[in-house]
Amino acid sequence: MAKYQTGDQALESMSGGSGGINFREVLVDLKPDPQMGKTIKKLRLIGLPIEYYEAQARKRSIDDPSKTVACPFPDSELNKSFTRICNDDPEKDIWTQMGYIKIKRYAINCIDRDNNKVKILARGKSIFKEFYRSEKDNQEENVELIANNEEPLWTLVGGEEAPDVKIIATYNEKSLGNVEYDVRFSPKVNKLTSEELAKLRQIGEPTPEELAQIRKENPSLEGCPDWFFWGFNLEQIFKPTTLKTGTEYIPEKSTAPEEMEINLSKTDEEEVSVPKEKVSKLKKTAKVDTDEEEASVDENEGEEETVDLDDEDVQW
Image 1 (cartoon, rainbow, N blue to C red):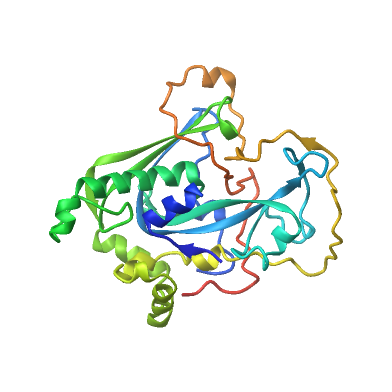
Image 2 (image 1 turned 135 degrees about the horizontal axis):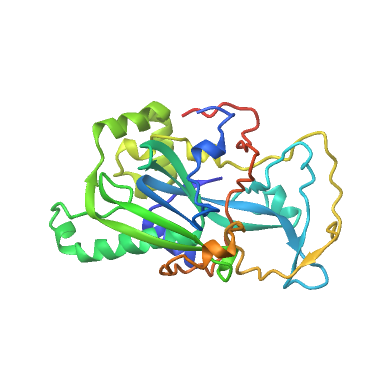
């Protein structure tokens, strides 16, 4: 299942509400604007991210393992989502057993500075690695202050005092997934206000028993304040997706009608279309390393997507 991670744990792993939540309104949308060719989001990250695995509707080709083949999920008629959340244990994960390609993803609560609403940023390594590289660099710069138990400028990207993060998603047909990311940190450090914390708490708050269980499963979270776990219940939202009943699945070598040349180490964000005349006028931005496996949550135009929660309420 999804699990909370500290920045160091996330870096190490990179190197090796209700059941009717509307993803379109809750998720931070980083799809480049079709008219402008880019989208800019300014966010205040809160707490710690969770790590989870997401299965894509494709499998390795039997004839050539360097390729993948499109392969619909067996319950696609009942569950219209284009992805499925995996169980961390491959032996317990039905999607891994069926042979679907899975990728590592991260999600964190945040405040969207456009409207000051609490949202979820769910993306892969290319963005989250930048968060924790900057976090680690800042911790190293403040090592003496930390050793002397003094107040450093900031040590956690989702801590009480931290800078806002600006993410610039630019359409680039030469980049992985046709999207190029530029991640920047504000030079100004902002302290979470009582109003912002109240918004988090209003959305969701774990019980003392649930907090104790979270910290028991990961002792490194023992010193984290309770509000780190307020907001959307990420562990519940991104829990493993079960196979919808009413379908019968018979494993086959391949059911895909078409093979696609895909480098399995470079599956990234969704493809987007932007008029070339718009792209040519765009100013170039710094590139963010996107050479690891990842993909984005599907955000099809004109179609609302909800998180599969097995018809259970999302409650702390």
